[in-house]
Length: 370
Image (cartoon, rainbow, N blue to C red; front, top):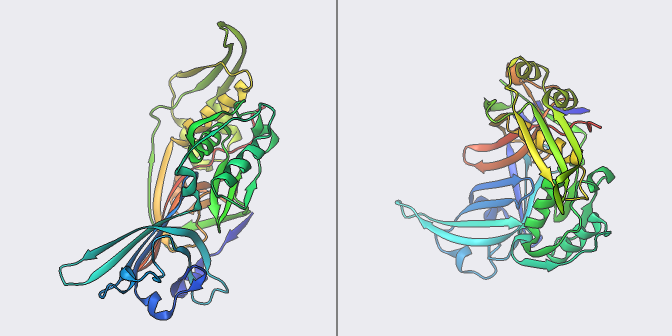
């Protein structure tokens, strides 16, 4: 894998650009932006927040305002000297407010979401055939709620993890996508107005954040609470729950050998004595593979082992789903091949500069245990 070198960016001035309805804001309109933040998350709508200096209600009252309700905004961050700024969100203004401060200044507050929020607005009622391809189902539903174009890629091994049939009764499209995400371990997001449902982001790059360089703050919590040594899933017949057709076992030691973890963190986990705790689960869905379910339970459990958050000098390439290697934090250090996965990133641009806050989790997307 390649590693992004971020040192040159430290010498340059951060900048941003905003397009409203595909029109680039004028220099005067851009200068009126006092504070700008974008929050990107996996498997949920991303959002933006702006504070605009508007002492004369110029933008609030005008129907032609670039910040009017329903306006499409495209926001990009970067640094002077970069060939192109990085688009962080394409979204729609969904809320407007005003604040009058003690000194008489008037600020216009703008909030909005990307297109994925369309999927949370209306309950859907659809039936699907048991033999229907899950990728086709997702694409049909995504297009129905206005998420297009789409890029849906579900590996064959993940199709086995999806419950069949897939009824959609009184559930929003977003809740449906999230249910599929939990079953498969895949991720979904919207980028540049395109809807993705895939295993990984299209990036072979791992971003390095090093203490004393780009990494500003780092907070972690390693907890063994709730961890189990073994997961067992029993596949039983729905008509006869006492009849066991198959049993799947996944033990922690075997799982740790398969997933990509920092070597020192792996050693720290191995040195701890886990009680002979066991997670048992009954599976009555005949279409599901108990081994896949056991793997998913162990992976989800292991992700809770370590909580990581922090901040760095503004990095527009730091997006949910990408991999991050940490340097200078001893047992929490990672290399290019064993890195953390970004779950959330908040990019903030104001008078103090450009900062990116992030939350990470262990990458437990290792190779199958078959």
